[in-house]
Image (cartoon, rainbow, N blue to C red; front, top):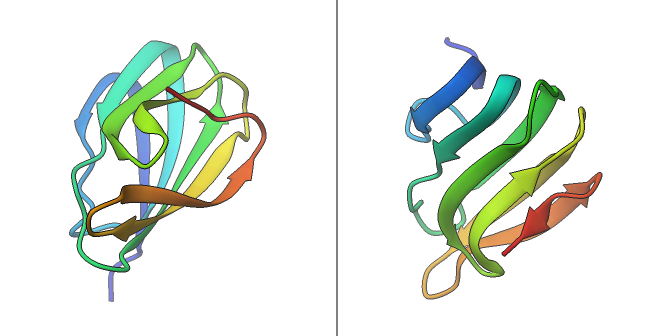
Length: 99
């Protein structure tokens, strides 16, 4: 059985593969971007900025906007996909800002 954890590093991380993985541990080497695709009903995803080499901005369909910005190491957010609402925050540790 494969691990549900994806460890990513860099600046242009592209679209996160939420079909294969549910936990994303991310290291930024400078300001970084990624995209969180739409999910399926009740799907859960956790995003963690493990090393802060620059702000991480994740674009997606969030209940609270279209982007989430992580600006400190160990900022993390757990999200649940709800049809008609998008990704809804179930836990926000640190200061992930939605806009």
